[in-house]
Length: 196
Image (tube, rainbow, N blue to C red):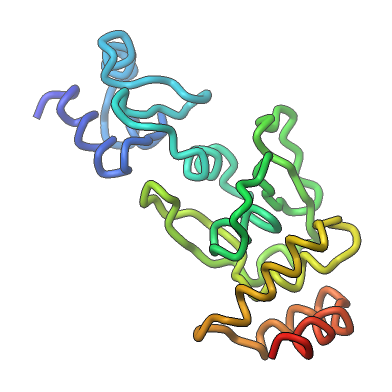
């Protein structure tokens, strides 16, 4: 298989979006990547991120590939779990406290969390283009949006809880565990008492 065909196949395997490292790890030379860019097979959407010219950018996947230590959180997680119908103006991504990336993408609203809370509730879901991305679980997200420091609009919070309460697949115990960790037990209880 020639390198241009390999690039097409690799991009198709990732639903149109691929990173420079993924190409290099599959023995595609920088020369052939540049040829693919010049021929219009690929477009550079961000530094180190490419997409097939005939596809739209999977921004969730692109940013996750660029910032591998980040996890989608808060309003972005609500949107990804269909707990909110409002597309976020900037994508909420949580990083470990002390993480320093001098040139964070302007599409990202960065949040920082201590290590003991950073890794709990991390799960995976599919982006709208079908790529796997890291996001906090619905229960963790519902607890975390109640924290005053996150300043999530009360209407978004209320609608998220209403939508979650109607679902057959919900874990109240896990939600309350997260509410305890984030010190929002009273707020979570007040929402649950009204909705359940």
